Length: 358
Image (cartoon, rainbow, N blue to C red; front, side, top):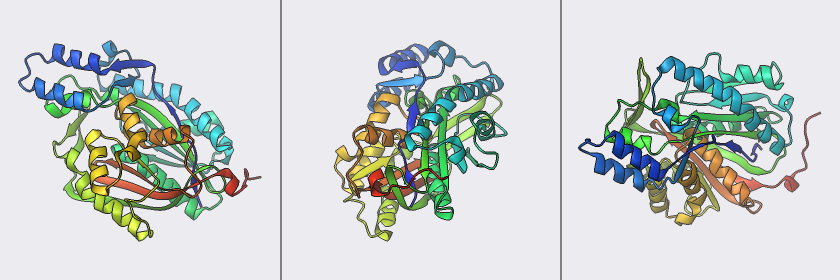
């Protein structure tokens, strides 16, 4: 079965703290009638630091959508290859061992996708399949894992590379001053993650079942309003409460696999905000400590969109992983409102000594 190996993660060098974010909000929106509410919501996120691709002075400017998209492309090309190389090294594979690249991003646009450039620049074979996913937002990290699992199920000796590249700061819109927009300005950060799913061998999460669930009639709760100035992020105030209808879907996926979602060994989930994790703990009846990896990502990096799930998993690896055969759940949540969910066992390399294909 397919094994999700150790992710590699990188965040940009420019840092903005919670205190700096709050002060900027006070200065730029001094007369906003709902400023006290926005400040309280930002503080409640628990985000201490975020990393961004430009200094904050440049981030707050808006040179136009064209220039921002050019910057997205330049930064992706400058930063993504090193992250991929570490993921390949951790999976003990070479670029020409990869059969498909699944690239997820919702914060910039390229055609052809960055996958084409990566194949040319990093030595991937010209027959490498390309699956760019641009419109699943934060759920795309979970979707990428699931599509990699599907691929390796169809091609048991194949290997998939997942890449998540999110520069949320390039979507900042100075004219958007609703409470949801002000909250988003203090929540989202930038980050890049990559991970290999090996069809054979490897240490990590042995993927066994995946599924999707969309809450009916919620497609306008998280969305982009696309204008001449770029992507304007819209966030409905009902979004934080979505774990109550999504928890039963997580339970059903586990039940279909003969597991109890309340009695697993590890949980790697998207941390859109603290209430997401609090409600999952409540509705799944799981100790809050189980979500410590996701909460650490939120605290140190903010919401880095599709890269959150991979960073949370990377933190579990850094803690030493899990015991062999430990059972776990991975999930990403995003626009739709959509959940992309998967189940798997922890698998050590000693369990099977499969090696690189000849």
